[in-house]
Amino acid sequence: MKFLRFGAMGQEKPGALDAEGTIRDLSSIVSDFTPETISKEALSAIAAMDLSGFPTVAPDVRIGACVGGARNFYAVGLNYARHAKETGNPEPAEPVLFSKSTSSICGPNDPIILPKGSEKTDWEVELGVIIGAACEHVSEDTALDHVAGYCVINDVSERTYQIERGGQWIKGKSSRNFGPIGPWLVTADEVGDPQNLGLCLSVNGESFQNSSTSDMIFPVAKIISYMSQFMRLMPGDVIATGTPEGVGLGLTPPKFLRDGDVVELTVAGLGSQRQTVVAYPG
Image (cartoon, rainbow, N blue to C red; front, side):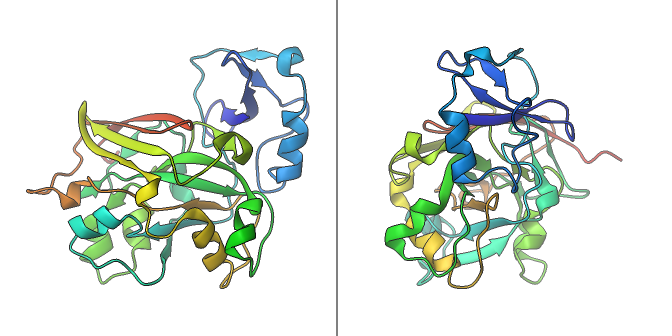
C-alpha cells in the first residue's frame, strides 16, 4: 500500500492511495504517521481495511514528507560503484555512514532553498528506507523484516560545506529543505526486491541520473545489518541509501543548482518528486 501525509507544512494529515489512485483521509483512525504510529503491524492493519469509506482528498493538495517527526535521518555515502568512480574515490570496504539533520526534511515538491552564499548545491536521487520495527545486531538474512516501506529521497548536498570545510559531511547535507522525502511510503510487500529499482533525475528537463539500485555496493539488507551493529534502529528512522552516478560534482565541468532550476526525480514504483530551486530568503 502507498501511505502519505498531506496538507500545509506542520499541519499534515495521514492518508493512503486507494486502488484508483485517489487520496483517502485516514485521520479518523490515526493521528499522523510518526515514529509512534508507523510500525509494520500498525501499517498492516490499515492496509487490510476497505478504504472506500474514508473521505477523499483533492488531488492538488500539498504532499508532505511521508514520515512526520522522524527522530533520525541517516544516510550512506559512495554506495554506487559508478558514482564512486565518477567522484574519484575507491569503493569503500564498509558502508560510509553520516546523518542529515531532521530539520532538513520537507515535502517531495517543496522548493530546494539554496543556502546563503551557496555556489555548489547538488542533487542526489536515492532510495529511502523507513524502519518499521526496532532492530539491533540483526543479520542480513533478517534485516529486511524490519522495514516498514520505501520512498524517494533527494539527498540535496552543498559540496563546499561537505568537502571544503574540514570534513563532517553533515554540514553539507542539513540545510533547510535539503531532505525532500516522499511522496509515498510504499510498504515493503508491494515493493518486492529493493535491489531492482530504477532511479532517474533531471534538471530543467535534461537527464543526469539514470541507473538502478542493482549498482549498489552494499544492498539494503547489508546496510541495515551493518548499522544495527552500532546503533538501535527504531520505527520511523529514515535511511537514504546512496546515489548513483550523474551528480553535478561528477560532471566535466561540474554543474550545480541555481535559482529557478527545476529538479525532477523518480524511483520506480515509489513515485516522483519535483522541486524548484529558490534563492535563500533574505
